[in-house]
Image (cartoon, rainbow, N blue to C red; front, side, top):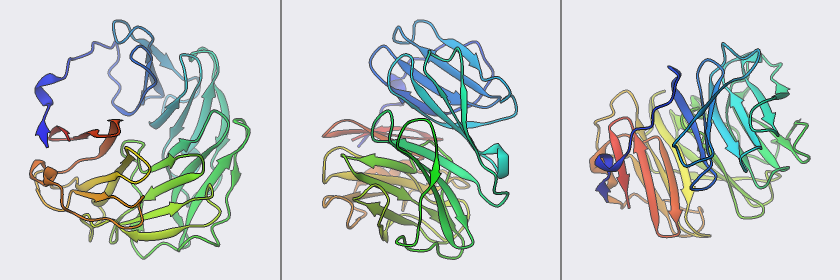
Amino acid sequence: MSSVSAQWQKQEVNTDASFRGLDVVSDKVVWASGTGGTVVRTIDGGKNWDVIKVPGAEKLDFRDIEAFDANTAYILSIGNGESSRIYKTNDGGKNWNLQFKNSDEKAFFDSIAFWDKKNGMAQGDPVDGKFVLYHTTDGETWKPVGTDKMPGALEGEAAFAASGTSIITHGKKGIFLITGGTESRVFRSNDRGLTWTASDSRVLRGAPSKGAFGIAFGSKDIGIVVGGDYAEPEMRSGNVSYTSDGGKTWVTKLKIDRFGFRSGVTFINKDTAIVVGTTGTDIT
């Protein structure tokens, strides 16, 4: 594991929005989403960025974006009640269709993930001890997913709307969901959310600021969970765990811990992962 912070190249974007959502479609096409109802997009590898304001979303914070090409993208905003929404564009951000507006004042959505353009799932924090899940099978409408066959949330357990990687798809039918707070677990489904199992994430837990913040897989079996304590970002233990059996079990044997809290992770190939956090960037 090594630091790669010095290798980043700053991109000039004409906005003062703060960004959390990012999706790299190709070496040319990149989308990002953030505060003030703002989405940005480049189709020339970062030479130029389009700044897009989603109509009627000026007060929303888009924490997750899932893009498929230069024209098609979904965005998810966070917050209690109607602040949690899902929009979609099919024309590069010129027009946005509001597909979903949360009507439960207790619910707070965190992130979304897709298997393909039409099939995806949105994740929300627990309500009355049950995690909130919605899915789409046509890329247009969202319906609730029954969670009777999913382990209930433990007291004080929730998810983080941090980097859009608290829920990810894996293969044709797999999906993972990670949590934090008083407890931190990895939920795994092999049938697109019909049934679930849960295992210990092995990262920090015990407070609202602690837990698992991001998850990614480089292959069928190899995956990484990152997290820690965002209130103490310099803490250098309990920030990462590793699986070699497809997410059934997780261990803490990587040396990334020495770099502190991390909130996002992605694999750029089956052997190489990039991990980011408020104190820097690492590669393994």
